Picture 1 (cartoon, one colour):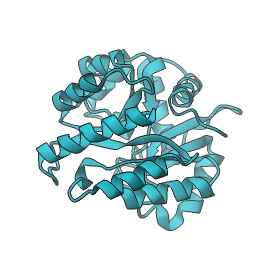
Picture 2 (cartoon, one colour):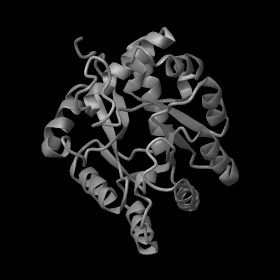
Picture 3 (cartoon, helix red, strand yellow):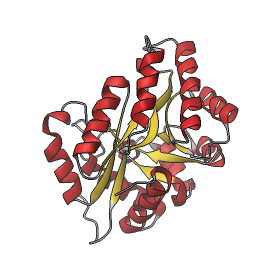
Picture 4 (spheres, one colour):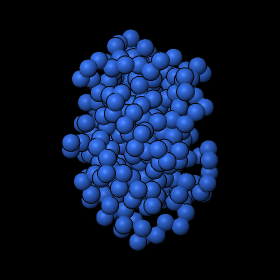
Length: 266
């Protein structure tokens, strides 16, 4: 399946990738060049701990079209210190940083105890709110705890996004009611992703994001291979099919959504 081609002047945003991770980091310049050439003109590279957050900021500072988010992923909350949080808050003040995240809870890969995950999720929700930064949420089979945390700290004037959305249409509606966006990964292209496809049909285009989560979760026809930002085009094409609209309409609307949340300063 050939890579979809956008009309001249139409662009996309990969709202969630990990450019500091291999194999992307080994050929980061080429990865970014391919994305820009294909119309993916902005990429948000995501921190998962202090070290990767620093790398994300450095990549954003050095590369056109790249922005950063900083935070501590639920897999990495063990051993996080107050001093590390102070360093992350310092990084969050950099002009390249557009959000706090990714943060949240993961009940599938329980690399850290759930209570510890929850403690750091709530702590970081407060930090993001205090800093008036949008928040990027990791929610893997932790829907009830994530919703409870968001409701506890609501409202979020800077809003946020549930990255790599894996819930159903009902959960998506509740997320949208809280002022959050729903981010669609390449999983939507998988034949058995019927629940996610149904959610895409039902969520207004004005509340959708597109992402790769590269180097993970490559969409069809690249499934099983290393993902990269340019492949968000396949996800956009599938969303257009599910919505019954053009690729360009999906691109324009999701780009506007990302611009609204992240406030890109080009």
